[in-house]
Image 1: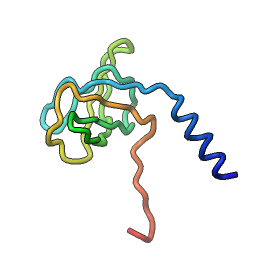
Image 2: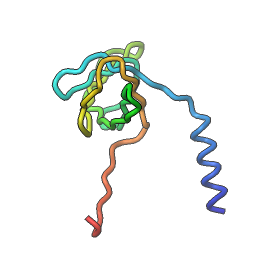
Image 3: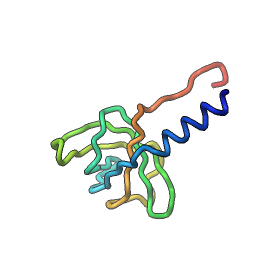
Image 4: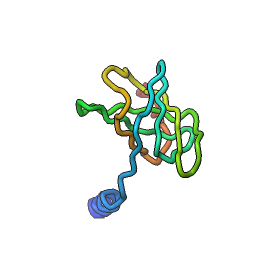
Length: 102
């Protein structure tokens, strides 16, 4: 039964439209993203031109509903990233696992 539910979840995820924005500015460690309606605390991924994916956290949202802007802080080295990179919203907040294994 679990395998069936996993396949159903994968099919539902595959059917969701991929909404992405673009990095319009890099200033220090902050990325400005245009065209992506996200919320503060949401996790996004920045797709670099070399195929790398960098997670980033949304720390500020401004602009309008028709022209949303978000300030994001990368959660890793930014080397090689820049204006024009695609940004994809994950729809979920950044989470960190905790437990005795830490």
